[in-house]
Length: 286
Image 1 (spheres, rainbow, N blue to C red):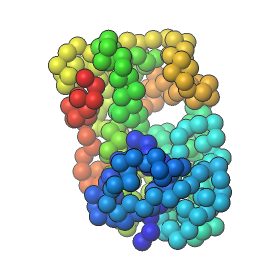
Image 2: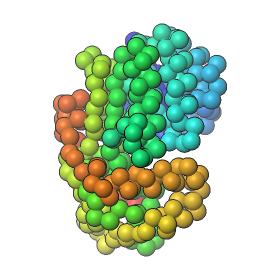
Image 3: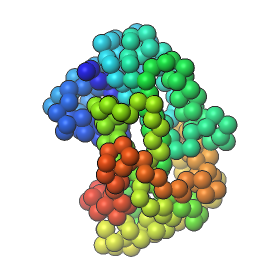
Image 4: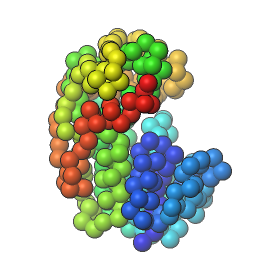
């Protein structure tokens, strides 16, 4: 069984590559530049292949001979078009099963642009008549690593979240669900809503980080305008920055607080707690 994963140099894709390698599975990883794949290239069982979501020819070459494919791109303004191109190339090349990383509450009628495009791509995969598995994770715990500089220097992290409860998930759990769906039978036609085992506010996350790091870490709620300015200042394109603000408005409406059994349904084990994440990443945030 030939497997291709995309997005292998990102957080979820990197963990998925490690999960597949750890299972003793041989797989192909599509990257834009194999020469810059770093430690990914040293994983047992991996075959690096050059591929670009904006170049249909390279997509077709990467997908040739593949039976199961994992679809993941960054959430850019081009994401829907890129993912649709991947789906069409996969259909042409005879791929039988696509596992797509989607997002919690994906819906083509959503006010959140990310949720609209994910739902549109899900619909395109269904229409392609390939087998599918959709993974819809909530907020990534590892997203806090983007605040590392502020956590290290000031003992603070910032967002426009107020006291919203969010059932955030560890990306390692997402990767293990993806690995199961790619390797095992019985995941076809499934939609897995993926969350952690509890819904926490950002202040509660800060308290658990404080415990893990052994020093006070505070969450500072900021207005949307301040968060937007910080995102743009960090180099995010306007489309993506505004999409993240829509995400946080979605959180503040209480639409991401549900705890699901998705991780256990797919893997047979409970998802990691935020406390586990905080302790495992304490060194990275110190």
